[in-house]
Length: 327
Ligand code: PMV
Image: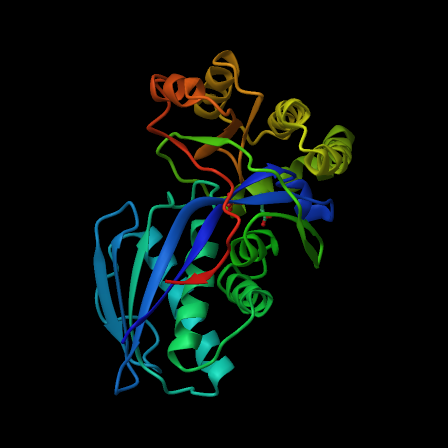
């Protein structure tokens, strides 16, 4: 029997970019999941296929010591996905003490890629969980989070915060500040996501903010202001005060704009959501393009976003209380 695990994507309620400089951030898991099915092989090869990474499907196969795959990898995004799966499988081999284990791996995901919704972290978390369970090892979600963080850290060459992997493994709302991660009590937040159809280069956007911060004091102050806002947001979350959370999301978007990481497509979706009556709206993740997140319990924001020219897809994505799970 193959083993399947799934793990959720996430939105940033508050704090992206500032989290890179040690400020706290609050990502929230959402009900859009990646699912990874793993079957142990009787040789040491790894065969990976993905049918639904919002891209054309692909299949590649190679040996445990084989380095890169022996086929042309179709796009840089798929190449990136392969790197994550490869490292996740290596982590599972380590965890189980089975360095030569071979696998067939199948990925399905309904999380847009590279758009600020934590698609790679969800694939890594689900892959680590499924591959370890397939080898007879049961990890606690905190342990899956730790392995998954190490995978992202390696693949992203040191440019990874713990936010995405911890949030995806644990589910719900979480708080991340440096290496300290904790889960938070949160009400059922009515998230609506608008997606402009683009993917962004997180590394380049992070480098841009770092350069701005080095050149201008205002950018340094803006990062600190985001940290203050996150701390106020935590109080609003604990009180379940959705109106206040929305106001703070609006402020957070303004501060991210000041750091130069918004885009016309994102601003138009943010304003469409606000005009439709959302409690608040902001970009989520690195910015530049990708997704915005709004809070609205009714249908008006989703409808307004779907009519916004810069919005390719709008969907409701409520808080996922469950993190990684066996399917
Ligand atoms: O867009 P994403 O999901 O890659 O999120 C990036 C979040 C940043 O804070 C900008 C970077 C990070 O590693 O925390």
